[in-house]
Length: 85
Image 1 (spheres, helix red, strand yellow):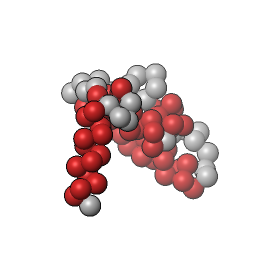
Image 2 (cartoon, one colour):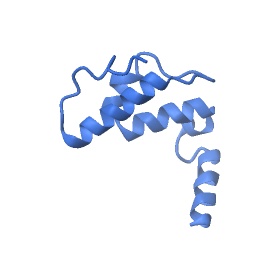
Image 3 (cartoon, one colour):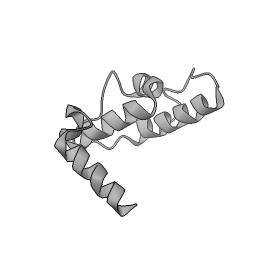
Image 4 (cartoon, helix red, strand yellow):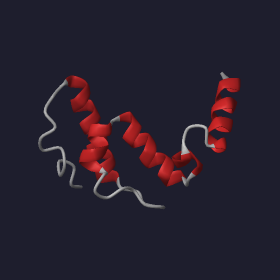
């Protein structure tokens, strides 16, 4: 397992997974969010991607809720704005 993790880190830093993986931490996070659920990323983050140092707990909750709804095959209506803290 540890060997696989080392290999993944090496591949990531070499750019083997694409140029976005040689970018900043936040670029990697945006990329991972988009890969995990393109539809939820589009709904929650696409118009305003995360920026360096940003902690957006509301959108993070909305994204997780969106992924949950997608996994159940439920409608994605009214997800945005459902976690206004």
